[in-house]
Image (cartoon, rainbow, N blue to C red; front, side, top):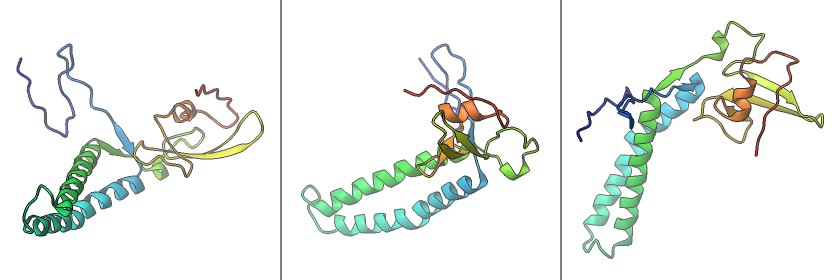
Length: 164
């Protein structure tokens, strides 16, 4: 069975039924896009050449099978290359959405900061961002159960989210 190669920017490959898979959208804020781009540039232009140089020095020391520095640098280079490929794929499908350009401010939208109150009366503040930006600082992905439940809601709406 032959498969056609699809360009990385399309992100489409044949599924089991032969139909192309839909391109996944990677919504991201301008700040998140900037962070990913900076990390990509740093890894590609600074970190990777540094590790390649150290790897070459370690390789010049002789027997590579017992050279811990050589083995470590090879592993480090693989990890950098893996991260570069991941970031490149994420940036290829990135759709930058600037929350400041949002017209409907009466509803929860991508990039909005939302203050919610749980049934115990405790308030929690979330910012709805892209999957690559979510983290422990209150930024939640728009694809998370809470993020999906909040998108499109208005002030005073009750939202029920089942988390297990």
